[in-house]
Length: 72
Image 1 (cartoon, rainbow, N blue to C red):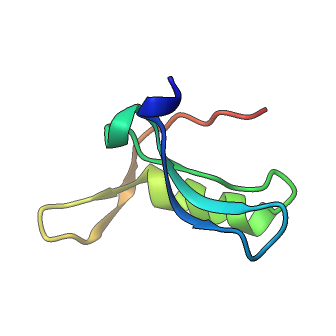
Image 2: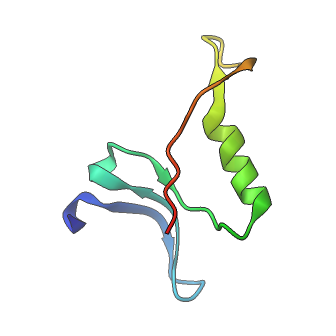
């Protein structure tokens, strides 16, 4: 399984380490890490993943889509 996980944006500068993006299944799935203790961060990702964009790239205000949230 470890061969299928790719971390992007990993930094050893902030102990113990920080990974801003994980791409499970060899990049077939996008995964972004967020702290459950940060309401602003959770709100950002909720807005990002639940927004629907039209063919012109603009957000369609009345449309929403679902996404999967995994917590430990």
